[in-house]
Image (cartoon, rainbow, N blue to C red; front, side):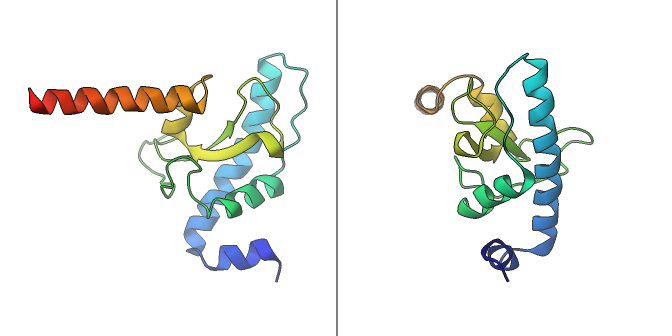
Length: 134
């Protein structure tokens, strides 16, 4: 049994099945998105390379550590659906430039950096605390 298969055996089979389905769609969407953007950068991620990335992430969101979730909306990605995220937003969809995050993380980050997203999160938390105190 290969390393990836051993790691997946430790996780709920239904969860892994859903992750695999999402990864297949995500890899296809990455190629479509890159073409739509008119980018000349190659898409070198594959289903297998993204699954290896997920194994290193323990099949959880790379940023929040949350388990992925499906079925929150009838169509399209739910807030906690897996989403392939480019670490350098203008870079290629390549194994060394992607991670898998919850969809809401990818939306919140947009084309910004992790530092910008973290700063935004700090501001949101500070405002929420100030409202509770007031």
